[in-house]
Length: 130
Image (cartoon, rainbow, N blue to C red; front, side):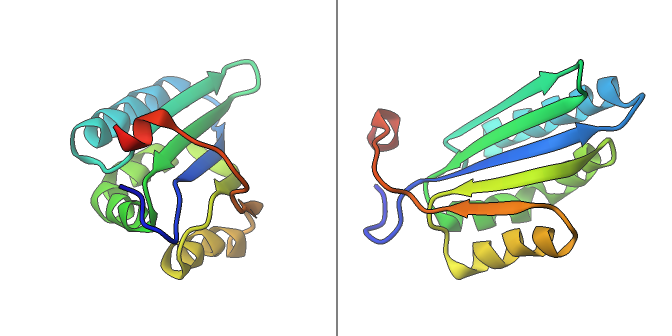
């Protein structure tokens, strides 16, 4: 069940894959997604690759801020492995995370990554309540 003050939170991470790293990127992303599918709190993870432009897009849906913080803590080794093959070009947050998550997201902006935070207006997701 969703908390009363916070709805679901969606992350969209746009990554530039380093030249010559596509296959290693694919391997490490697959390992990371397999790990979170079994152990992580995400409701959904999808990764898309534009090979022509060497861009990858990761979408992650979370129930709330607590699940994001849990993911960051448990998945750090996998995140580091993936990041050895890419750089973040843009990070977008859809929803209203708590201050602890905002602090973590803003730290990416301090490193020069463009970050947007987009408050939720209205919507629904049937599988959030299943």
